[in-house]
Length: 116
Figure 1 (cartoon, rainbow, N blue to C red):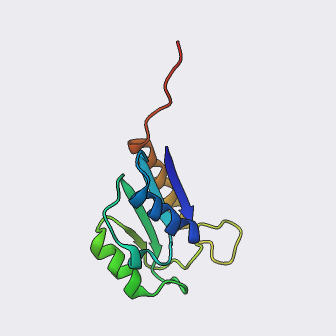
Figure 2 (cartoon, rainbow, N blue to C red):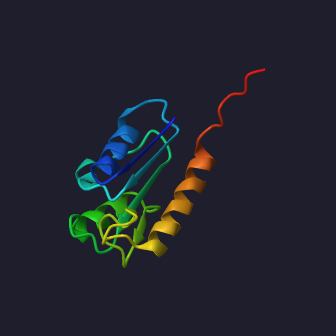
């Protein structure tokens, strides 16, 4: 089982990775507040941020990246860059982040058991 969240859900995905035993993967997109709760996730965790996020200060993103060096930051994207159809939608960043997220989840989530 994995968890995925956007905005406040990004923070909740990170909290889940820190606290819930048995998770296989967690992905958090532009979760504000993660820097105040930095820890060691119990499962593989992918964190994604926007470089021009008007809601998450750069210092906060920097603290997360320093603690979790594998975090992704899309320098030209703004908050909500994955939200297709909105003014903040950034197709190149969204396409790349989506592909990376799918690869990450494919790598870390077990396939459902087959029933004979």
